[in-house]
Image (cartoon, rainbow, N blue to C red; front, side, top):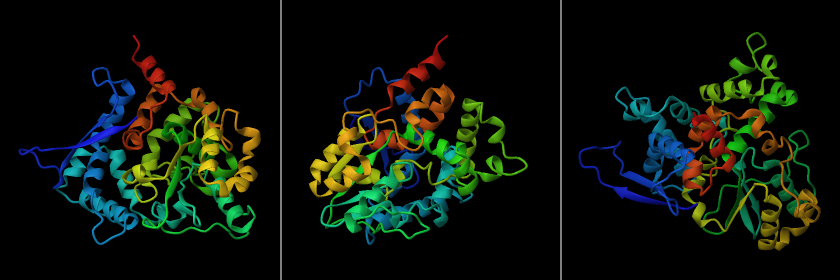
Length: 350
């Protein structure tokens, strides 16, 4: 689904010294917007719209990768001012997102979000988007081995994007599914929950005295709702929207040479990627077993989040995660899943 971006003039209203942007979906019937679209558009206009307006064109003197970090830092500093328009307008979860995104330790702006395949492409990778498998693919391409463990030394090579000399590739994952996958991996899996401290805020979920995960593991919908509501108190890198990764990928997605999707047709998309870069055919076969899997439906590897939707999501949590990830649905041409629209309609039924 495509969308248009237009400048609107509001002479009687100044929005944070930036032009006001009006966003609308191309090809959508504006007379009957779905409930999911209404939620996404409202949340975007109350939050990410200001980020887009502020970051747009902020590249003079800087590379695109650095300029996005500068923009996030600028937004954070401005929202902390006593008379900040941002603080009055933004929902609290977006204020904490900007706060946490600008912190170096959050790993939002590291070189690890790009993997270079020499003479072929640079791939934008992100947490809960197959990053382990993409690193294995690069290791096989560069050194003929798949070892990517920190303990034994990584062989993958990260590099800041070379915007002028090399094309870009990315596989996008549905934000609702990705958010649940991160929760299952970092909060439900005991070995990761207790060993990585990514189920944040840890004072709520992992504290030995007050941690609540263990008490609610069998109450899946309640536990997930708790995390959805509380996680913005301390944003973890696995839950940030896709659009904020790779130097603000939403700004450049239209210039990417290859954009695939990690959905039920992932293996067909992977085959399309293999045809686009035949030099990667052999490592793709070794990592993904494409010959065996091409005609199968992708269900995920680590968490199989696509099969857990009904077990964890409710209309309330669908609505909230749509708000958190509204920038992805607005600017990455992603379609709200049919199951999410159906669940929202169930909540609206008499």
